[in-house]
Length: 487
Ligand code: NAD
Image (cartoon, rainbow, N blue to C red):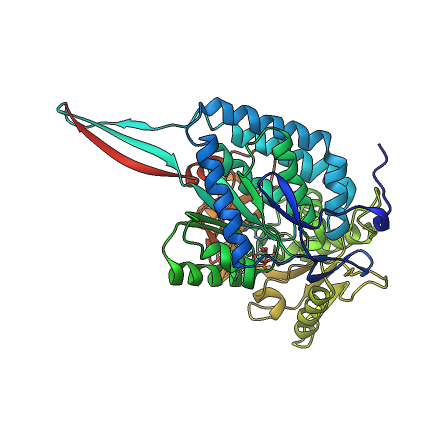
C-alpha cells in the first residue's frame, strides 16, 4: 500500500455530522496545514441552536433504538463491526487526519488508527460483562447496586491525536448504552466526522453519534452548558478544563471527566541501562514533536551520568528527519500552528535569558512548515519557564540530583501530575519511588503507553479528574442506583 498522497486533491467532509448524514456548513474558522503553512479550508462553527439540534437528535435516537436497553451483546457486535470498518477504511481516515494534524500518515495507519480500532473492540466487550452487583445485607433484605447509562454524553477532544481521542470517548460511552455529542478540535475536525460516518455504516442506529464542529467559546460552551447533556468528558488543556468546570457550575451540576495537561518528569539513576533510557527518553519528546499530554519533558538525572546521557539523547535527536505529514516516510512531526511554534520559541528564549543553555536545538527549523528543532536545555531550575510551563513541543529540560530525596523534590511539579518515568535497575528503589511520585501513571524502565488498554490513564493534581481507558472509563459512563428490597 502506498500511503503518500497529494494534499491539494483530498475531498474534505466540511460540515457537522448529525443523525446519519453530513450537514454541510460554511467554513468560518481559517485552517492552515501544519506541514507547509498553507491555508486550505475553514472549520464550521456550530452555535447553540445547532448543538441543541444535535442533542435532540441524540435523545430521539436513544428512544427509538432503545440503545441503552437492548441485549448488551447487540451493542458489542455493532461496535466490533465499526472497528472492522475503521481498519478497512484506515487509509481514507488517515489522509483526512494527516492533512490537518501533526500526525504522519505512516504513524496513523500503523499506530493511531490500528490501536483505536483495537480499543473500540476492547470497550465493546464491557457491554455484556460488567453489570450490577448484589451486595451483602441482613437476610430480611436484598440489596443491589444497579447501573444504567446517563443518556446523552457530551465529549470534547484536542487536536494532538484526533482519532485516538475520539475513540477513547465514543467507544466506552456507546458501549455503556449512551448517545454522544462530540466536538473535535477546530484545527483537526475532519477525521472525526468520517469516524462517525463509519459508525453509522457499521450499523450504529442513526443519531447515537453526532459531531458538531466549532471552537471552545461558542460550541464547547454550548455542549458543557446544555441542560440535556448528562455528563461531560473532556481532553485538553488545564486552562480549558477550568473554564469547563466553571461553565458546568454556572449552568447546572453534572459529572465530568477531565484529562488535562502535563509536565512529566523522567528520573534516571546511575545504575540504569543508559542506552535503553536514552532511547525511551528521546522517543518520548520526539514523538509527535512533544505534542503529547504525557510527553516526558523534564529529564532529572543523577549527576554522575548527566553528560553521557545527554550525549546519547542528542545523538538520537540528530537522527530525526522532518517531513510533511502526507509523506509515508515522515517520522518527525510539525507543530500544529504558527502561533504554537512562536510560543514554543518564546518559552525557550525566555529560559535561555535566565542563564540556561541549549545543548541541542533551540530554534524553529529552516523549512516552510511549522517545525521546531528537538531541543535539550540545561542550567534550569524549578522556576525556569521551560520547567514550570507545559510547552507542548519538542523541548526537554535537564536537571541533576545527588540523591533520591532531591530527585523526588525536583520531580514534584506544583501544577501537574500526569505521568512519570523512572529508570533504575534497583527494584526496591523503583517501588519505593513509585509510591511517592505524584503522577497518575508511572513507567519504570520504559516510557509511554503500551497496548494494555486495561491500564487507565489520567492525572493527579491539576492534570485532571477521572480516567480514560481501563474499566474506569466504562463505569464512568454509567450511573449507579442503590436498591434495597424488603423480603
Ligand atoms: P485546548 O484546551 O485548547 O482545546 C481542547 C478542546 O477543548 C478543543 O476542542 C477546544 O476547542 C475545546 N475548548 C477550548 N476551550 C473550551 C471551553 N472553554 N469550553 C469547552 N471546550 C473548550 O487544548 P489543545 O491545545 O487542543 O490540546 C492540547 C492540550 O490537551 C494540552 O494541554 C495537553 O496536555 C492536553 N491533552 C491531555 C490529554 C490527557 O489524556 N490528559 C491528552 C491529550 C491532550
